[in-house]
Length: 126
Image 1 (cartoon, rainbow, N blue to C red):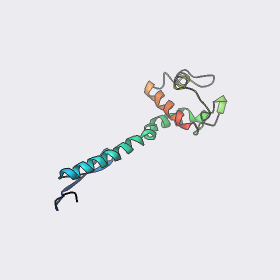
Image 2: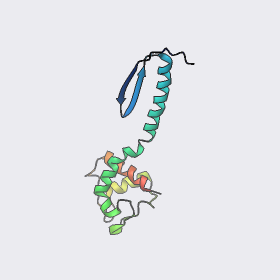
Image 3: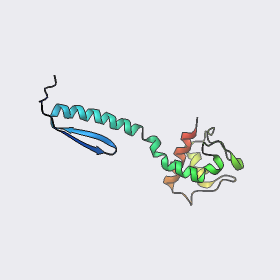
Image 4: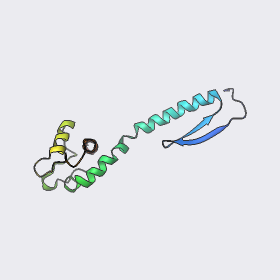
């Protein structure tokens, strides 16, 4: 059907959490390349939530005591983050400068950490 020879050599390995198989013959290599490129694209597309792990850990340590783990607590007048519709810029300003009882985080968190927390907060919205 595909013109494969009877003996095919397979090599197994792992790269970035994705298992791959290398085959000696050209047609099979092409098929496998297309298949694993597809699988890799699915892994990359689904890695968004994994990127928020840093933001989530910072949020749980610094924000959850008042906003709650799910963003709905509202302790000390903290806003419900699930209902919040603040823009990315507004979130950055509030996280950086604080508001009322909320402390300023710009001297304690890097810009990257603030960006990660902001990305996690957006995932709490319904």
